[in-house]
Image 1 (spheres, one colour):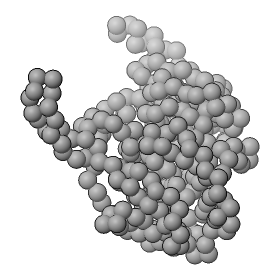
Image 2 (image 1 turned 30 degrees about the vertical axis):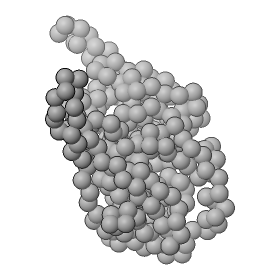
Image 3 (image 1 turned 60 degrees about the horizontal axis):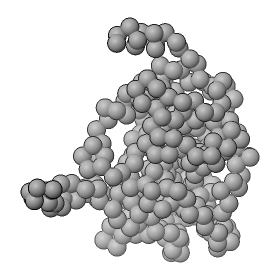
Length: 281
């Protein structure tokens, strides 16, 4: 039986209603995304405060610890308990985190919305990551993923101001969809869910609404995922890291359009798909 730590099942409202006045002086009520602090304590030691929507706080905490390389396996964690009354989550490990003060002494503030941060050097351990060399993605699967995201019911459509991340199977089936105030939180929450479900990334595709920054590429690589898609663009460092680990970056994914930036050999083009689309115009 798959090991799972003891988890709380904390819930929180995703949106908050506020009164607004438009340019004509008319009053109305709109929904805006909720945003709340979640202070992470590991073995009673305060580690970090995450600003989050609060949709999947247990998975977010697990994914954060995983992607920060502070905890090696989920079996190291005894429990994750969220208490929204005090905006905190208490993580208990079985044997503590070795050299935790030294490993958390250096912090890099990232470009993520909501001001993401990572402990240690951004490039630490990147060259040790090995993505599956034979992973391939069909052009038709890219289009299927883009269409699924376009029609997905979301907090963004209701209230705006959030980022979404999704994990897909190799044939384009949606596995997880997470929204949060920052894309770094959304990717961490998916990493946490993958850990809980003992899910590997070698045959998966990751989608984000945000930019393909170095942080996003590194986290995707740490999760073992060879494909990273976005409706937005990339940065120079994100591009560089993807080339180093052999990850395929697909940017500006909207409709039938995309830009394949790295690891071109992984994508299986299907020209007939565009020919059929042109005939329908």
